[in-house]
Length: 115
Length: 156
Image (tube, rainbow over all chains, first blue to last red; front, side):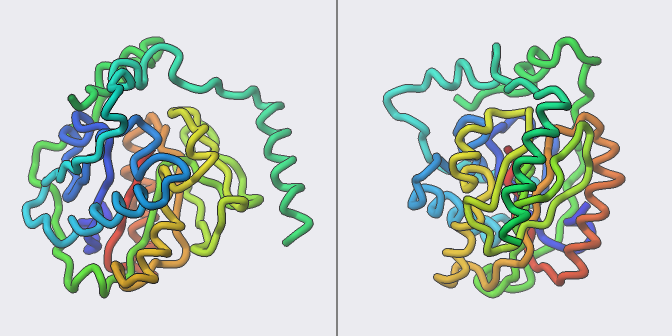
């Protein structure tokens, strides 16, 4: 939609099968667990390198629907995450409305003072 | 081997009506980059459910987006999303919303300019129609208004 409106787009992905189905104009694949498409927490060098590689694909992809696969490996010693990611009890519990309201009220109060 | 997420999603959401995946078999739309990325104004968006300070949380099937000031820091940001494990993103938003990294890549000249604001929405929207007919057109208008040259999307 954005691409059709005249703005080049590029989408990160860690789910190759979904991205192949959706078929966006430009995509960059990193084989990391969901929730880490631009890297591991507190590893700014890794994150920056992934984002830099991804942005480069704005220039290197010439064919609509191309998926560039980056060679990053989550853990060379342990690939068991691939067996367990997004299975079983993966999804976090959704809080009840009262809890969600309380969490939100606390967050808003925290920032109300420093606004 | 890349994980196959479509069958895993079917299994995780087996109590719901079967999800009809968006399948696009046509050639995608295409707009060529008009100048090197080092001269582009690049906008960042994450579907990771990022919130800035006192912004309202996302609700079920929420097809709205939040504007995140480009100078936001970790302490300004929260995550509200129940479709992925958010612990790492909460500890360091750059896992799914690489705002600090984009600022660095602006500073070192990799991109011309990081657009202000950046954007986030909560990607766990069941209705593809809502995304297509509500969220995407609003974003396209916003990006055109702000004269964005390239749009970088990070899902979660």
